[in-house]
Amino acid sequence: MPREARLDAPGLMHHIIARGIKREKIFLSKNDYDDFLTRVEFALKKSPNEILAWALMPNHFHMLVRSGSGGIITFMRRLMSGYAGPFNKRHKRVGYLFQNRYKSIICDEERYLLELARYIHLNPLRAKIVANLEELKRYPYSGHGILMGFRTCQWQNTREILDYFGDTEKKARKAYEGYIFDGIKEGRREDLIGGGLKRSLGICKDET
Image (cartoon, rainbow, N blue to C red):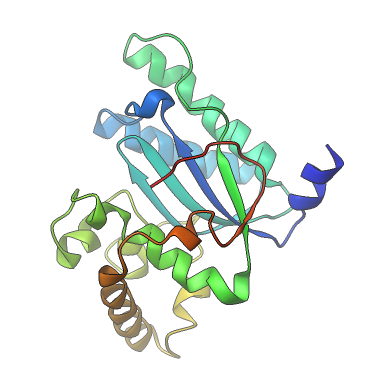
């Protein structure tokens, strides 16, 4: 327990991944996606943390979160348990929705922040949920379109990422988009899903 408290200290950057049990889908409809995002906002108000990048996929989700005063553990418990019950009720199912708890990897912010944000935001393209970068901008269940200015999101910290790319919004978005484009050819990055980073609070083993 003391180890968990130390790794959940404010200021640490976590790459969080949670997957459906037996790799089953955790989002079956637009209502599911929308309900989840509403619960993210609610959980952040109750357990303050900063989300810099995120992507929802049919059977799992990714988040890049800097732990705040609310702590990752409390935030994730509130989010996942709050979502699972209504999901089961909507779809007339019983039992666990998520595989184990969730996987949380502490990352070196200076070295990995931008690479992880890019990796997370390219997930819908790699999974062929969208066909190209133009569609990725419009994918409503990822932080990429928000960084590109296609949507707004009160709880996503956009300034942190964009500030690395330019001193004006226009320049920053153009440079960020180029950085995303350059990442397409890199494919699956083992070092960004646990191979080169320190494992922390979760226990899932095989993630995409």
